[in-house]
Image (cartoon, rainbow, N blue to C red; front, side, top):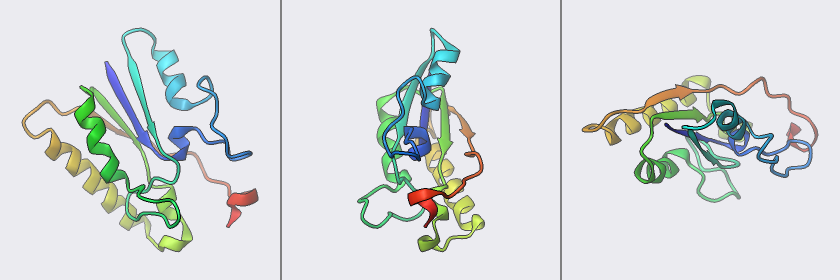
Length: 139
């Protein structure tokens, strides 16, 4: 069974303390693979600063919808886990929760359209835990 974990730095595994990537045995997609065991391939597709709606300034093209299709094409997927939207909450984007929900709905619709004539993988939306803005991330 192939499980795609598609998200932002929370999925990629960035430490909020030092900005470095957590080791494989600390990142949630890797831990999921370990817990599930043999017969499951967990594909880690996290990207720091990835958004649903806008490209973040100074970070290049990180818009999630543009990056998902290559993963859909490269793998036969049984499950797609999406953890996106946290970066869209940044003040500079001035988006409401409804705006972000609409963007997530559009992403899901794009997935369904991609699989229009094939079996649609199960889609799971994962919400990150509460975000506490500290240190360099406070602004």
